[in-house]
Length: 128
Image (tube, rainbow, N blue to C red; front, side, top):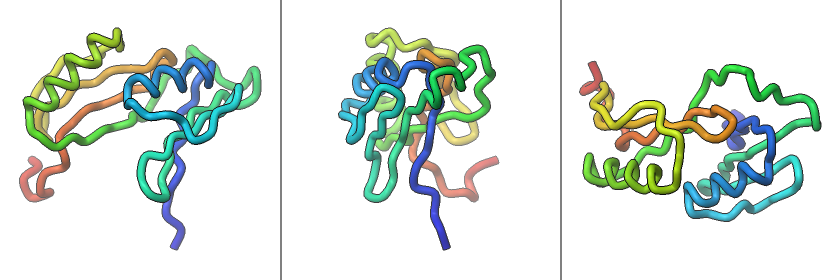
């Protein structure tokens, strides 16, 4: 059975977005071109930034998905990442707050794509 292994985020400027994500996640793209960049995020899985054709991405289009990074280390680690992102000038959409899965915050990249930091998923029986 096929398994999804490439997650694409649409951006207006792939090179500028690759630099943003490089600083945010402290990793270099494995592929970088004027309209496409790819970051290997795990064995067999990648996060890609794609501008499509030179006119295909509408920068005013609403974004309906988010990239989530689940962290170990509890609330202190999440607060530390929040402070780091603020220091990088990342646009914070929701300040750190408790949700059904624990402490989380939400940010957005320069194209409005949503980025969430949350704890490693709890036992599904604990989610209400």
